Length: 442
Ligand SMILES: C[S@@+](CC[C@H](N)C(=O)[O-])C[C@H]1O[C@@H](n2cnc3c(N)ncnc32)[C@H](O)[C@@H]1O
Image 1 (cartoon, helix red, strand yellow):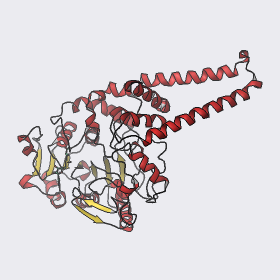
Image 2 (spheres, protein in one colour):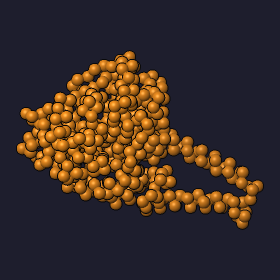
Image 3 (cartoon, helix red, strand yellow):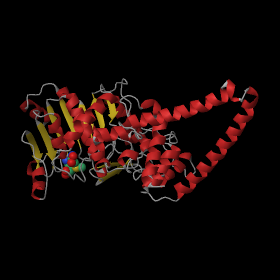
């Protein structure tokens, strides 16, 4: 069987599984598979129950019994093939991974870990809906195609660029602040969202420095605290700067962090300055990343998905070692746990500054951090991946640890119609659960 045929089969399987959710915007391919599936099942039922077929109630039970035996044998066959396939694949064997989706489902077997999240004070959530996100995607794709920095390795890829653009244009701030500019791609994204809004950008190296070597973006309506003028976010006199910009209502300011600093540290600094709307680009999962993130902070036993086990014979250990074969950033129990069964943060460490400054913390400290974060949170919202991994071919994040993508697996028609299939696969490989927070002092 060719890999294209396999892929088509996979798309069918996935669209069947998610049939109930796919009608909303008319993806013909997915709908077609669903119809075929239903009509086959209906035809079978009708055959067994139709009076004129000769199969009356007297034959119904033996027929059902035979059907059950056949189904069990088929399922046994499928399952044993799956076990062989899973144990023999390399970490980036696309076909095996696709087979893995097809037979196991994307998230069905990972319930004991699930998706971590931070609780907000009053359970408030964002105003935008999945329909708004889909509409936003439609608008953003042609904009993204005009980006000046085509290869933004070490910076944001498509998913987070979309998330930043979407939120900036939805929230309509009067001032946008960015910490961590690199070559200026995120500055460009902010500019696309708000053409006339001033930007303040903080970054040790000025983006103009990159212009000597290749594409970079320097904005005309941006104050740079960069190069020799660099000031860290925690050291800037924000009150003075706000009055310079005539900002009296700090809820009209959007702050975007992509500077790989301890997010708890940044949260405290932002609270002190009085900012309300924050976006963090890299919201790393527990056991991964170079700085302490909100996901890590909130991964707790009382939250669905939190509270991990370092026990080598646990269900979690088995699931993790299995998922690790398919997803680069999925960590197995050895990678998750440091000495003394320390699983929180990264092996019990609170990381900071690109992993250059790390501090061991106790579980009690970690727990207190989560209590503090949740005491100031009005909203916590993780951007979903733009499209499922069978469409984007991404292999980094584990789909079982993230919310459902905007374009779900199996919806190739929609993926193509939106223009996402025209983008290079590499732009989808940087998703790390970008998060939007609304905060206020408790
Ligand atoms: C991942 S890159 C940012 C990518 C960029 N946002 C983009 O979209 O391409 C991280 C940036 O943070 C900068 N950085 C390092 N320490 C920083 C700090 N304390 N404050 C602000 N930026 C910092 C680095 O120099 C680097 O440019």
